[in-house]
Length: 250
Image: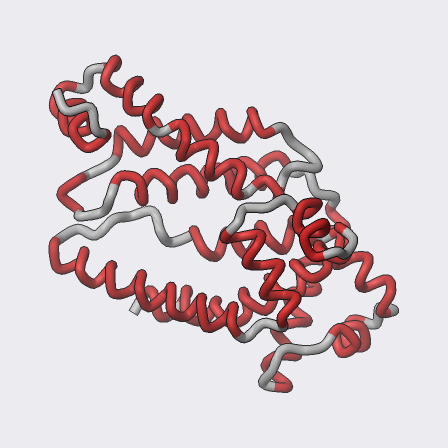
């Protein structure tokens, strides 16, 4: 038998042999760990990587059960979205983050959106400080503390509507076009960031680096990395939200 994941999946979907399912899980543990490590900045101060990996394994098993090759999606793509979505749900359900931090993150997001609509550009930290009636130094401290919450909210936006594969060959083509368009919009949004923001986002999302490692790479404090990440993530969320919630459903 061809031991590729595709061949194993084909056999499992026909037989529902538990041994085949377990083999598929083992072959894709690297995917689970990769997702868990890529998202660790959202939970590393509160939870254990092993607990998150366990949630990812459960999601992987669900992906194996529900995957439909006729819909045209790759299993790795489908499983990755399931795993990341499950990790987001798990982090949210643990309620690790203090209520005051969550409230500040919501208020900051609302302030950022309001000022963006008012000025037709991203607001400065000074403008956010004035709008929220918080001294700028205190605002920066709160932005550092809220980094995990803001990032989690952004991740929820990215993954909230991505769990169903295309239902036909035509839909698969449309989905491919939408993915390419989404990648283009994301790339343009990242390109619009300030240099330091772009560096942090690139190291965080594309290099999967911890905040502490990003701080060392850029020669700044970890707290400053968190502040920059919060501001950059708010910018990306503001720029991408209309497209993801509107364009992806048109």
